[in-house]
Length: 448
Image 1 (cartoon, rainbow, N blue to C red):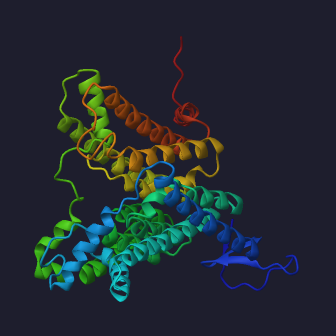
Image 2 (image 1 turned 120 degrees about the vertical axis):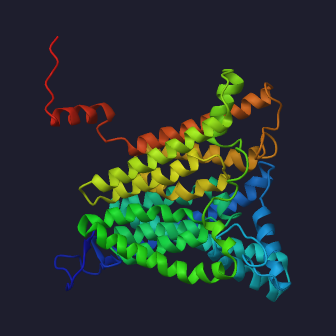
């Protein structure tokens, strides 16, 4: 663990020739800077090897595909700019404005070379860079939460997360994810303003990183005041709104819609969601007459309750504990993914870095983490198109293929829930924790 630097001379008692590592005003006195450099190099190499293996094994071994749909979608929409049309003004665009940062860079490279594939490769390279930033954030966050050994494990766990690696190569989600993790990094190192800036920027990349903002505010308020932190966060967020939304909203008020609901919110229930899985079990297996819309409404109710409970925990917690911040933030993002009726497989990328941070201290959790990666990789791309598409299972209801698909999604979500339970449960166990709470309240024993 480290300590914050004020004004310090070189420490006494250190071995000659060794230079202690300092990062974001924190000095890790027992850690040599050369060790950190070796760790970082190892993490980057392992991450690149994992992505290369995914690119080779997915089509070559598993006879599946590298999905190019997002690349084609963004490229075709960007071509409209050359025709004099502007996104959000002349045509609707369902993604926040900062998505055009990587899109514009990749598109410029394609124009310079007059090669569409350069656009794809450039976009992939940018996402790999974003993912590398995420890996470094994981490593340095874990240095504050655990120690350098566990930090290396956390980084390696994420670097070898092959299901997440697939979406790093095929989606732009690594961009907002790295902004989310940067917000967490700055926060645990005591740089509150930078944390608010990163979380706010994430909102303008893909909305979900803003979920970190209230938890970061409540975390920072432990050593400050809630009013001060709320004002600081709101001021920063308003500034970005004035710069990135207001000019477009004045021209076309409909641009606000991109920030008010998730893409696909007006479509039906996707079959790879927990909502549909529960519905299929009740309706088609147990033959209990219950509508999918009712289950969806119930799931959204559970999401709201879960988020309120997490905020209450963050508010009432007396210690400024980075682990509590990580756990509540993980649960918040996971609940949004788990309870919603619309689900894209790449949403898994959103909370995988937090999972890697919180499983690194326990071999059992690490094993289950990789099991969730297997399920995620099978879900997409291996199962997609063969066993399910967004709106329905491929095989007819009641057939062996239909039951196999339902069993797969059931096991996938159960595995994720087990992993979440192992991460958030008290160290001494739930029963022991309840017993201690009862004892603290001095409740009289019931005589027999």
